[in-house]
Each structure stands twice: as structure tokens, then as C-alpha cells.
Image (cartoon, rainbow, N blue to C red; front, side, top):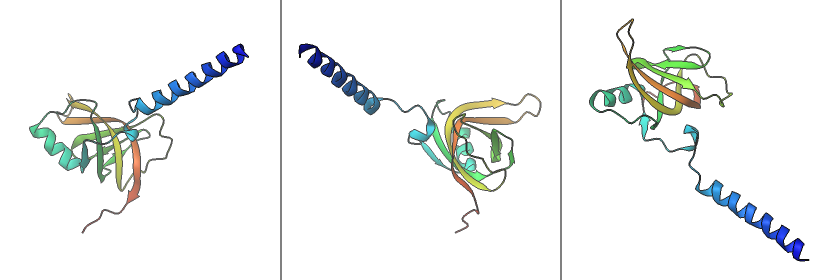
Length: 134
């Protein structure tokens, strides 16, 4: 009987520990976190002209795709968005989309001299749709 109670209490403690861990854990993916910025790529690039943001900040961007590759897209103003490895959805290659990802910083392209803004670990929130003109 004593052995059964010890075994039962071990499983109860393990279950409570796992539950508390899941409740208090820090979200790891951008999809699970609240964005600090929500808006267009133009708006975000404009803010970065005046202020430097901390890398690792979660942002949500909605804009028109300028170019697309297999694992990334480019928004206006040199914003390059790389999809998260766990996002298995097929991203569109054109249109107006919404993504949520992690800001990784700015860099200057040595060949073209353009400023590039990197966003990685992104998830597609809204697939291609016509831009709301109202």
C-alpha cells in the first residue's frame, strides 16, 4: 500500500510540474506572442528611420509582396521576411499578405548600397488578398 501511494504521489507531482511549466513558459515562436508593431512595411521602415528597435521584437506586417523565393518574401523598403522552419504552409508569391515574425535588425547591402531590414521566424497569418482601399 505504501509503495502504491509513493508511486501515485510521484505521478501527481510530475503532472502538476508539467502543467505549471506549460502555464508559465515563455512563448518561443512569434506566432504565440503579441506583436509590438502592427501595420504596413512602409510604416515600419519609417519608424526605423527615427528609432532603432531591439532585435527579437515581434512585429506583424501587412503589405504587398514585391518578390518571393521559396522560403522568403520581400516587402517594400527592403524588408526581407524569412518564414519559420515549422511553418509548412505554402506562401503566396504575389498579392497583399499579413505575416508575423521577429525583427532581426538592419544591414547595408554592400553591392547595391541599400538598407535591408530583416524579419525572421515569420508565420503567414492571412494569405493573399486584395488590398482594402477604403
